[in-house]
Length: 108
Image (cartoon, rainbow, N blue to C red):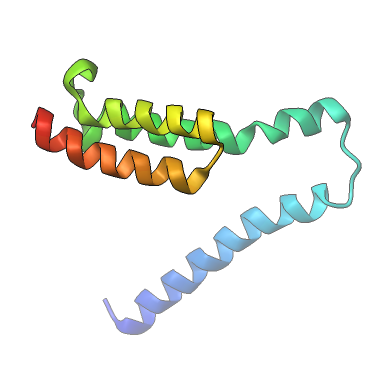
């Protein structure tokens, strides 16, 4: 494959990705959506983040592990508890990272 072909594929994919995302946003931004739809859409970011995090917590590296002996699960629980109590994203992130390192050394 030539460099020109590779760059044309990359540029074409970027353009297609932009158009697929831009057109619906451009249309929806000009329309007044009903309150139930807006409320439903407000849950999408949290749902997507939750599904991404859950996949990595319960299947790190693509294989299932025992959640009781998993440093991933305990660190995720610690992170959630710290955020719930403090409402500090930075504090929860730091607690989760430090907890994960300590739990990984302790649990193996």
